[in-house]
Image 1: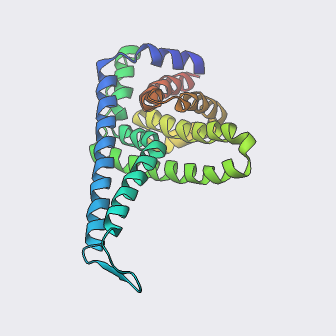
Image 2: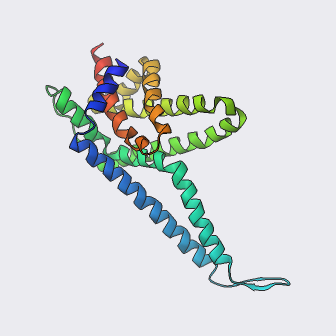
Length: 229
């Protein structure tokens, strides 16, 4: 069931609606990082507007330049670690379109569902982003304590998070948020294993940016499969 859902999702990746969601997610992520960097530069300029005077040294005028270059390094490091979770979370705003594309192709007899509004999608995205970032920051502590198990912790944690998010997304379109949570609990192990399958490509640069779309498509198939059962 899990592998069948996964391969059906892969087969549909060339769908124009899938590509549209992917490029919007990447574009908004890059714009967010640029905006964050611009905000840091403005803050540094405001803080260093007046020269800093140190006892025995005099006026120090290079602090602003140092902080400016330091902020660039910070953004680069942040982009390495946060590009994927941020892009995943932002792309989640549009994943209703991915689920609809899957249902149009494979479950065309189903009745239409109300479109998820941008603000509802944004609310769920912010919640997911906060949990995703907090969990992965905590995971760094576990990596340091258990370095030999780091790869397993990474897959288990992100598999759990991705499974929870994408199954909930697929299910609540059809049966509502409360019933989706009940169904998720009934199939917790299956959803976690499917989430771990989604987490494996997270290890591969660029490929990992497709995970939100692949996950939404896979779990749409998985939801319909467990609903039939």
